[in-house]
Amino acid sequence: MVSRKQYVLDTRRVALAGVIAVVLGLLAEAQSTGGTTKFYPDDPLWREPEPRTTSQVAVRKVDDLYDFGENRFVTPRGQEKARKQTPIPAGNINTLGEVPDSNWYTNRHSLRRMSVAELQRGPGKATPPDPNGAWQIVGAKSNGVTPGIVIDDRQTHRYVLKFDPPDFPELASAADVIFSKFFYALGYNTPENYIVHFRRENLTLGKGIIIAFSDEEIRAIVETGEFTDNRTAEWITDCLIKRRDKIARTWLRKLLPFDRFRVEDGMLAFDDLSWIYRLFQPHSYDVRWYSYDNDHGILQPLPNAIGTKIPAANGGVGYMAAVLKCTLAEGHCRKPVTVFVRFSGATFEVVGVARSSTDLEQREAGLRHE
Image: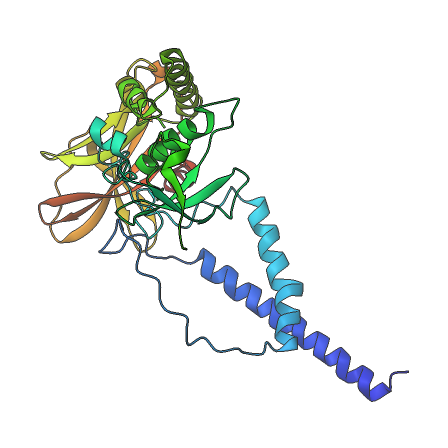
C-alpha cells in the first residue's frame, strides 16, 4: 500500500520528467531547424581525423529521472519524426558525397584509376610463400568453415593455407584471390592472397565503386585466379561485366550520371558516366548558377549566369552553387545535381555535391513567393 505522501512524490517526479522531456524535445527541434554552417574551410575532408583514445573514460551513473524522460518522450519523438521524413543520408561521407580515407578504407580506383598491373597486384604480390624448402605447420586455421593450416616458409613468413574442395578444384581459391583484388581496388583492406601449388612432402611439422572497372581491368583481375581451363575464366569475366552493366543501368536511370566535378580553366567540368561507359546517349542539360549563403543554406539566382562558365566573384571568400538539370528534350528528367563551389579571390574549388532536389525545390518555391 502506497502512502499519500509517497503517491504525491511519485506523481510530481513523473510530471517533472514530462516537463523536462518536452523542454528537451523543443530545444532539439529548435536546433535542428536553425541555420547551420554547411561548409568549413577544410571541406571537402578526404581523411577522417585519427580516433581519440578512450582509455580515460569514466563510468557515470545515469539519473533515473533523466533516463525516464529521455527514453519515454525525447527518443520516441525523434524516431517518429525521422520516420516521416526522407531517408537520412550517411553520416560518414564528406561534402562531395564520398567516403573519406580512414583506417579501414582508402579511396583507390574510383578517384585515381589504377593501372592494370596495380589491379592485378592488389594489396601486394611480392611475397608469396617461398617454393624452395619446406613449409612448417605451426597451427590450424581457427576461423571460418573451410579447412586450413598456418605455415611458416623458409623465410619465416607466415601464411594461412586454405584448400579447394577435392571435387571442385580452383573454386574457392580463385574466388578468394579475384575478389580480394576487387575489394582492394574499391578501397577496403584485404589480405595478400596467392595461388600456390605444392606437394604434400613440402609440409613439415614445426615447433610451434563497380562501374569504375573496364572490361580489360575485370579480365586482368580474373586472370589472377590462374584457372587451368580458359573457358572458366571467360565465363566469370563475362558474368562480372554483365552484372556491372546491369547495376550501372539500373542506378544511372534514376539520376543524372554526372561525376568527378572539378574546375578547369574557369569552367565547371565533369564526366558523363553514361557516355563514358557507353550505357546511354550523351545527356543534354542546363546549368544555372546561384549565390549560396553558407550559414543559412539560402540560394539566390545570379542574373544571366547560365552555362558551365563560372560567374565572376566579388572578391573575398564565399560560395556559389551550380544546378544541373536535364532539358525538356530529355523527356523523362532525372533528379537535378547541385554542385557547390567555394571561391577565394580568383581561386575556385568544388567543395560539395548534392543529388537530392528537395531542398532546391523548397528554396525556389520560397523565392517565388517573396
